[in-house]
Image (cartoon, rainbow over all chains, first blue to last red; front, side):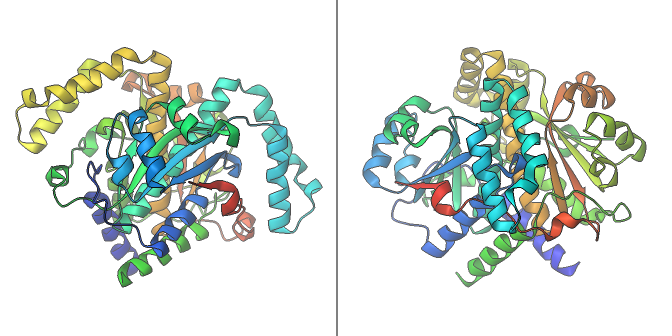
Length: 217
Length: 217
């Protein structure tokens, strides 16, 4: 319990410390061991059925970052951050992908793939009864779980982060050649270290009071 | 840096420890101070524009939990968990809500609400140019950020968790009277402590290898 009280304190402190960084210090890069932690954090994200229907596109090439600026509302974070992650959902969810996933399970757990038939039917059943647009939204939603997981982990590591929506998805997809890679952009997150003169870091955090956000039953 | 190496280790350990708990020990409840941490974690979730377009419905009443079982694929986690959180997006996003949010900002940051006019225009502009269905999906997506944040924080506190999708949203909304409260269910998460005989805790975690999930540019 003592350990948990300490962890509680660290989690809340990290989330209080965090803010949507508007200006990164472009000279500071995330050290490799910490970046490895964030990659592993992303990889371990929980998803629906465990299907991981996404790709994490990590951009560090300065030229490519520069190309992304005009399709990202000219937000300079895209260039100045250390690592830019684009969360991209798969273009298609299909039986082939489900079978590929089942093979991964069979390999990891050392079981026969045939033993996973009931789970296969659960997933293919979901596929069959769900409209393509709803499937797309469902895959996009999984990207947001990963985003939430990433921002919390990064903040615990004192790595600044700024989620970005509302960019020009088609432009981003074209520059990063995502359709050719079987996926399309959903949301982004710039990560790195805040510039000393980013005034937003000094603004008080705004959240509705708990009694407005929570309904207790 | 030493501190960060320790934190890295803790984050990865927590995410490795975590699994989608299928059977909770119904006799174990989350201690109040730890639950308070999770509520604050949820409250601090980053969202688009900071708008927090959701409500967190926390169900602990055993009778209400029991009522939810048939509309949640008869999953017993709903009853056996300590706390069940339903992430519910707002039914409507409108100018009134935006103004309410701006008042909260003005109050917290001790600025005149008029000084926030450019930010107001950014948000109302988004509202005007976005189709109702896309607005609904966008609000739902914010719920998933909160879900990702919650599962990571809970796992760090060694609190088991199980996200649940695909329940009967209308049934859940009816039982919890969500329409009357201005919101509707998106996704759920059961939290508590794993039963000693939940066999799923002993299965190896399945994730695709990093070289499949990541695209480095």
